[in-house]
Length: 200
Image (cartoon, rainbow, N blue to C red; front, side, top):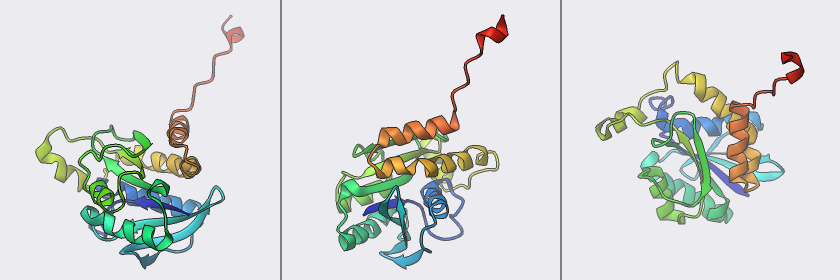
């Protein structure tokens, strides 16, 4: 079984925040793959389903971002899921809006949700960094991540979430690079080569 975790803060006040794009991604996956309804367990909301023929548990921790590791560790202990079979979807300040990076392990980039998870299960989980952009000044970071996406942002947020959802099978199969490539090709399809004969 794989554990696919979206990070965010619980409650309607935070639902549209940039910090909650991990929750949004998991919700999109939940709808697309017809998972069972979410239920409360492991200090979070969980749902069972299958992707690419593999059993997958979706998890949205309701502990608030800084304590995400408590929820993740409860789920991994209960199902005996190894860290390498855990995939975390989270916001990333240091990536431009709409850009993603996927890899196993690596640094925590000052992300409190990742720090909490690493403290509980170690650093060897997979993470998908979803770019939300940086406000430019350290003092503006909190306000930036806890602000809702604008209508203008939705022009890239919705297509990105859709592309990630239909590419998630690559992640489940352990192909982080293939996942990122597939998402990129969906969002930026290669332009058809011009027929030289039409230009003569």
